[in-house]
Amino acid sequence: MSLFGRIAVEKNLVSEDQLSRALRLQEETRALGLEKPVGEILVSEGTLGQEDVELILRLQVLNQRAQAARRYSKIALRNKLISDAQRREALAVCAKEGYQRSAADVLVELEALSPPQARAIERALNRSESQRLKPFDRSASGRIAQALEVEAEVLSRARRDDVVLAAVAVREGLLLVPELERALEEQAAHDEPRPRLVQVLLTRGILNEEEVEHVERAIEGSRNERLQIPGYTVLDLLGSGTTSLVLRGRHELIKREVAIKLFRTEHMEATAAEQLIAEAQTIARLRHPNVVVLHEVGRVHRRIYYVMELVDGPTLLQVIQRYGTVPERDALRIGRDVALALGAISDAGMVHRDVKPQNVLLTPTGEAKLTDLGLAMEVHQAPLEETGSIVGTPVTMSPEQANGRPLDVRSDLYSLGATLYYALCGKPPYPGNSAVEMMLGHLTKEIPDVRDANPEIHPRTADLVRRLLAKTPEERPQTASEVAAVLDRIADDLGSSSDILPLR
Image 1 (cartoon, rainbow, N blue to C red):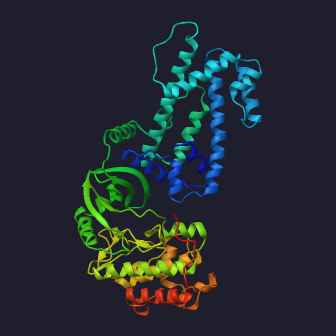
Image 2: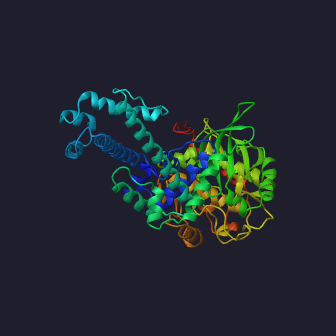
């Protein structure tokens, strides 16, 4: 586990489950050739905010300086350059000063080390990070530096191996985060040389020999099995969900950048590959300026992937998070674009089933495009997966979808209404601490008035949102084109759009 992640959990900034998901995502992206720090993943997933990040980074720097001071002084002690009393005195000074100075500077000031000795240790530590080991130089000048370099390299390699083992064990469900925390604390309590993490886990009975062998096989498999999307270079991670990763990629021949949706292995087990391919064939027939284009579908390592148009702009949710609310004129324009997209999807005989702010992408010119048709289904299909689970997002889910009833475009229009409410008010229509609580809101609670949360909203806009959020499909507008026309008329009456959007 990274230092960033450990601090985040200790300070209750992320939960153990959130950290476990981030560690898993880190391993998944590593298999694609991407090295993503766990902190960057937590930020990109919206789990941590900017203030949280700044706090953790400050604590991380302090922790790293403390570790560096302890490491430096222990190596000096083991090579008999200082006494244990001098080591303890130097560390006390470093801690009192908030680790503003290095252990080397303090030890020189205390006359425990000479400047040449201090520099020799620093050079050895620096070289260990960038050079491969060389045979010992037996000359008097090189003997100490080479010995220190070997020791520092061994410590660094062991630390990296411990991090990999911890991440894979958590991902495989063999190790819980609290168990890992306790094992790391016990490991840190030992003097150098510290026991390896696997030894601590075995001694405490947290893992057995068979489980360790399973983790080691998984690590070896990850190293040997680099997952590649044929014809594309994977550039970055754009996001992740329950069923898939979304990656930024580039076509190797025409150099076009695309978004690649790679379905997770467990989703492939629950959903037949043939079903995903059939869905892709239906989606690929859609050609509409407000629907993200699906270029191709493929299979790699028993997993399905979609190659889609890359929209280089923020999601509507990111805009809401940045500004608090979306200006009414912009929200109307975005809603009109989404309604037009839903009309095209309905005309193709499909229901989107997952309209929400995260799935509305904004281009550099402010145009809205609806994405993530991975949950889309044809109107005649059953609304439940073979597993019996309800699909969709509770934040914007229609009552009939929450009840597992047949769906049509009116269900998507309800989700559009919930999305508009979210954009105009900065919060969902039925906030809750759990999926069940939010779904109960859609099913049983009174329809909220947009103007209660945002009195500046035009009455006609508020009325449309209220009608879209009606509990039964019959009470809502019946077609997407009708909704788009109403949004257009209100926007025309309000005048030109604001200058806040688009965002780059």
